[in-house]
Length: 191
Image (tube, rainbow, N blue to C red; front, top):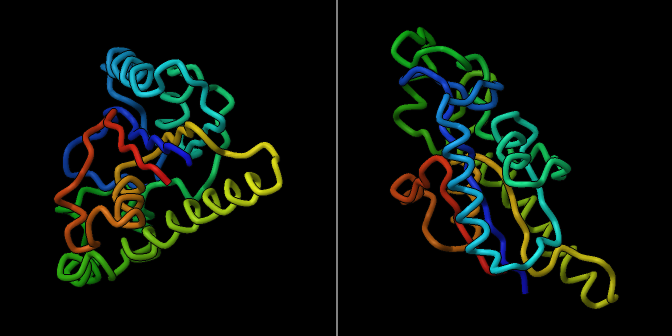
């Protein structure tokens, strides 16, 4: 049995309406306060237990939060990155002149931004990470090896938390965006 705590990064310093996905953007000036609150939440959730594994998206907004929470050596995994918005990265949505934008607005679950990935593709990527984590834990428990059991932390992005919720059967892909986790929020799954 594993309790997986997926932690969304804190507030980025990005103007409203800017598409930033996998771009490495700075954090808001409220980072220290937000990080302290996340750390408190984690202490409560962990109840004194030490995580067996800690993972992070390789983007700085997640790595900085992991470090602020006491985990500077978190294992980086590209599958934990936010949605890839391709050619739209760091552009304001209202200034994107790409005809693909209208198709994406009409079907943002399955259409991909130009040069990017669809939400469905992101869900598959996140599911791959979670499937591997579960398989590794199951294999190691049979063979009595070190494994990601007990408490596992994942510092990541909002889209990844949605993908994890879909993977866990908490909601469907069509309902996902009604279940967004706020910045600094935590989704806990038992797997």
